[in-house]
Image 1 (cartoon, rainbow, N blue to C red):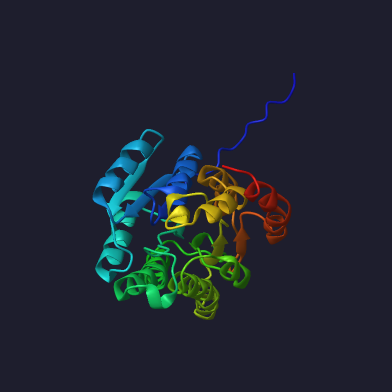
Image 2: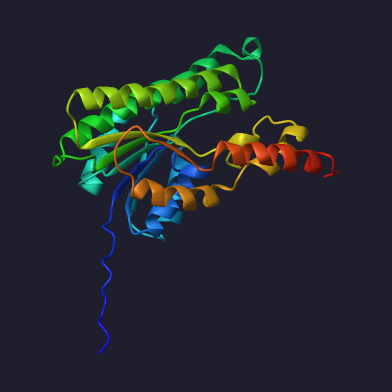
Length: 273
């Protein structure tokens, strides 16, 4: 008789995704649930949060909490909420962010927009990283990184190609630096159980990307940007199986983006919509 080979199911992971009510955050949550994981999402808008939760709950075990990532109290509450629901947090994804209300020069932006963009992206990531490290440090230790934090920042090239405002580009560049500095601090502190990584999803075709975009820019985005569910389907297996620390995870190589710009954009932009 032929040997019976039993496949060992992958363990269920506890996942936290900030900004999980729409776009890439929602698609990531959906993909993790499809993999059998348990997920906590958060968002600032209670109505959108409830709608996202109701939809995702049809796929698996998901919990939702209203949270403004730029508020220290909200950040602490989210960490405790996640522990209470998931028991163990294996992956923490700092996805929440904003490109600002308008894609205009710095001097044409109002002060509130500048401050909100900067604090949400950079300060929010710092606060969430701090809470995630404290949370993971209380979990069973390991000689290798088994708990992982992911930050979505901009590379130098990504910032140079971005058509968003200075506060958005500058704060996202800061997020990339947070990842490198935090990885160093974690290593120096001997926290071997925790890894931190930079996550670059590239251009994702969402409402956030299209906000205040010109018709010409929208044509370009149709060439360069990818739908959130496609990006999530590629990134989630990598996130689930990650090892070590201080990796830079890209959705696609920069060369591919360059080729799409060179060969795809001129043809589409030249056509009538």
